[in-house]
Image (tube, rainbow, N blue to C red):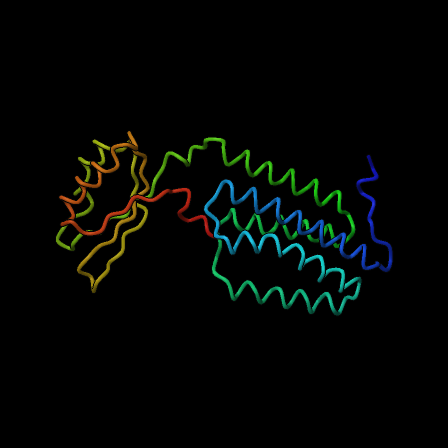
Length: 222
């Protein structure tokens, strides 16, 4: 059993060992990309990046190969990437860390560990995505109202009719103060009544913009 923790590399490495590590890293990235693509709406470019990233990490770490100065330079270069990219969703960040860890394991020569870790971690992601959670019941409601509307109690009767719970989480002015934009966190009594709920709200807010969003996709950026 302990043989899986044996590295295929020793001191210096040959072209064949290098290619073997790259192949394993690419396979780990492909497994993670397939798992993420199955349970999310990740873009094609992001999924391709998941496959390429562990290959890049493996090559970089193999080139450093114990050189402290080169390692610090590489760390500084990678840190700049964070400031050139937009915040990502929690699931996407987790996938990036997954493939980077697999790439590091491949760079150390622990190919079996890298593959086993990737399969287990991807399986856990797939399993957890299928388990119903309490947050799945909630949705984010965004309502735009004119400044003449007293929004504190303007929709109370509609909330009582269509929702189990609601909470005003944010209110801000817009359009030089002539509009208010309200963000609520709601739990619908019956999700199939979402259209009727929106139609009733439109009659109160002067037919301005209204949106119901999946609450699990809101506020999860890191």
